[in-house]
Image (cartoon, helix red, strand yellow):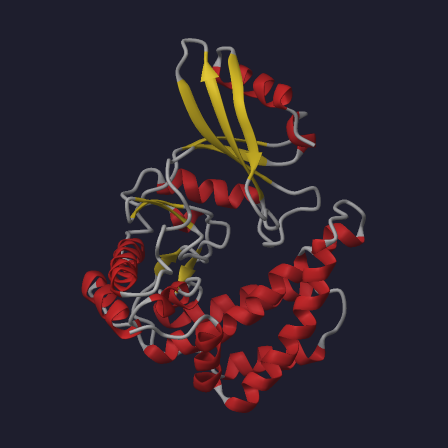
Length: 345
């Protein structure tokens, strides 16, 4: 349990001035990483907000080290992509039981857009504006010069755009072999299916956020003011981000949203790629939730949600992947779209 006194001592040491912690609360649900919002009053009476991003006791369910996400933030802060200013990273300290963590400035706003799900013309207009805003930010991200920004130093880069799907498959197949607690032959069979269906036409290599959309970014006055949570950042096919955009393509008109993105980005997005990555995301989710079992099984993190997700997700997911192979990639992607809420237009 985190204590306010512990937070005050840490920030006093780091900021070089005594602080008073006015508020400390953990955001929900915090299964991948713990995220704490801290409100401090500095010695002169100034109030500031900070975000603490902390490894859970058994490690995050995303099977990448937290330092990787910190390094992504550190580079993004030097680009036009809006993020909370990263301040410091630390590990092997007494703070938070010695778990790795980093601190960034708090950006005022909300992960939700009030009224975005309201029916009627007003809600329709808001959904259109939100979809367009999101498309514009993804276009900026996907056309960012990631090499000049230094992302090749911390993220594996495909040798060419055409090699991006193979690198993604090989990376996560290896992760699955490392984290799985049993053989799960149905998942292995699905991986060979993915290998046979890899997209062949990739518009470019882009910096990917990994998981984005409503509930993931910081919004204020119907505008994105910060892109948050970069733990799945990678270099690859830009269609991947649309495949894992938390229902964004179902929010308004799918094709008009993608057309606006393509106009802003300056390249076309092959729809067959989008179908592949939507189905691939099911496997990737299985891999992440199952990875959370490691800390539970060795006793480091006994939260009951971990086995519920870790075992349950694999069993449900492998049944889904078996059905998807029978129906084919395009139909499977359409089914996932329907499960996400259906298309509005």
